[in-house]
Length: 545
Image (tube, rainbow, N blue to C red; front, side, top):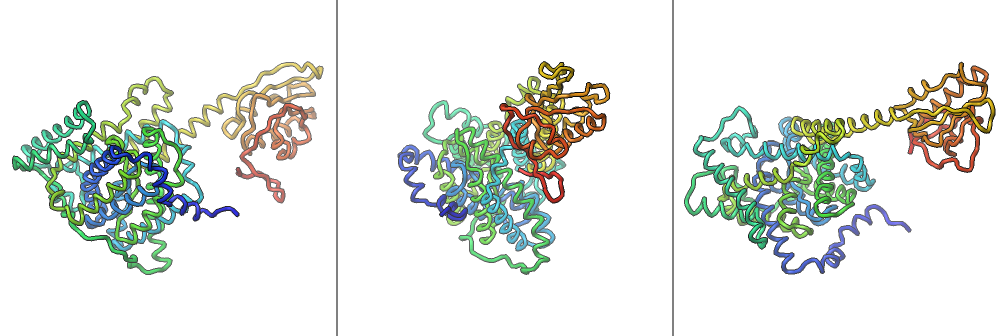
């Protein structure tokens, strides 16, 4: 008896089996590195979660609870050890309209539905479609996200009451006094210098954690007046409590939350799966897309039921974790538990950390995330690929990640179709076996983009009585191609000439109606399937496998 998807997911959550596989990995040195990496990530999560809560128009603890719950569950069951998830800005900007119009309980209900949709995506293994994202789109994604992370940090140079009001970063200001900005820039520079220089001396302590500790000690020891985490908001709180969203269980409610849930689920999965691929390239790991969908879905269902704003993978914090040495699930697990500890008992300490130190860490993340090599190769790669990189980067900054990836994939697909359409051509020669006949050897793929050019290659009125079309070096791809062959057969039939088709697959034999009897069987006929289905009742083709 085959196991169900739910049984498969339960097996993935078997922590005993997971612990057995990790036993050799968890040496004392590895545990120390993982815990310190988790502490570094937790410190960086605090201002991000608070800021994104303000953007969404909810209380800071709503963002912190989401960072804890989503981070905890995805650390245990996610598709890639080393990834960090939590409340993100990409989701917060979508949530703000919902919260403003309907209140926070509708947000919680939406997050639960969002998680359900993501869970279904995992059950049906839809995560595998992330492989359709071309590499230029990935480069544009990381470049755009690096710019977004950089711009998000600029909000720390503005009065914190602007952030708390939900306005977020505004180019027009107001800005902090010049002296305060200078002090922050010096502290940011010191943090970045420590992060850059410490690995050259020792790797016992993660460089980002050391940078935060040095700058915090300097600010506290010398009483330097600079914004600290406590200026954003108090992060003190209790354990999150279970509560069902207080919304009417009606179709009207579903009509309100479903559109938001669809958008949030798509954005969350796209950002999570792209981050999964990025972390996989660094850690040399592959797979796990469907498992990540399941984990993200389960995490968002739980966080919605415990008063959190939902979340997804965070590329910035994931990069901090990986660069700090985090390679196993322990780093993500410890980051979530450290964050909970900050909320419960350590808020008075964490609130003293200068924001400049955390901004410095994120600036180093920006430098490490941006694909600088994409600038060097821009003049050496095809112009379409260079355009896609710039387009996705710009749309990520201007709109959001989901729109940028969708636009990039569409443009790349259209460019691919155009390039393949221009590859179709023929070699025309006299037939050796059939005197008086002419042979058209087709080269290149025949699909919807090349059918117009295919039709223009033939002159039925000028050809001899017997014409042979050889598809040995071609491939019939879709229904449009089949229809083009049918139309060609009709043209030769109208001129009372004989058309023979060679080297078409058995799939073509069975699907062609008018031209089916014109096939010439050969032992070396190709064997491939077409992306069409044939409806016997209506006699038409439709998109299929």
